[in-house]
Length: 169
Image 1 (cartoon, rainbow, N blue to C red):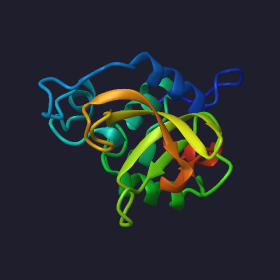
Image 2 (cartoon, one colour):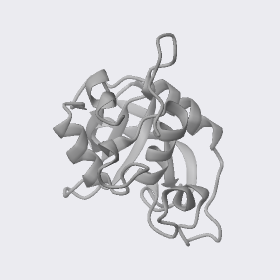
Image 3 (cartoon, one colour):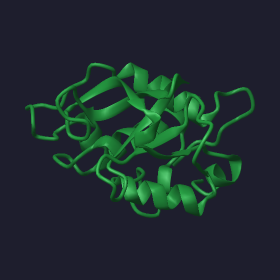
Image 4 (cartoon, one colour):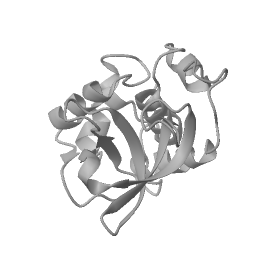
């Protein structure tokens, strides 16, 4: 059961960001396996886990199930699935990101490839906390890290509002 946000609590994005910070430095084990505590929690251990990590942070940190619990009971497992839900719920933004927003990236001109949570914005860059990233691999690096990305790699942002949240309850 997903807990409803009560007055005086953090907005969901900021609560999810606080949860993401708790996991900075976490690595999948063994390296290159996609095996994580987040995958075990989600029920898809051994699969690419950037969207699973963001789903975990929103569910555990903010009590919000991304995707409304329709696809999986814990959130979404793929970045395109997350984008579709954000658009459907009118949470999609293409500019003016804020701390706690969900940020989707595209590295190759196709569907979005990767997702994180916005921590800071400035100077044509967005600072994020991401799961399954690394210095040698933007999308499958095996760690929870802070990253600084050019805004030109951003497909869009998701900012949850009350109607989207109530759809998850």
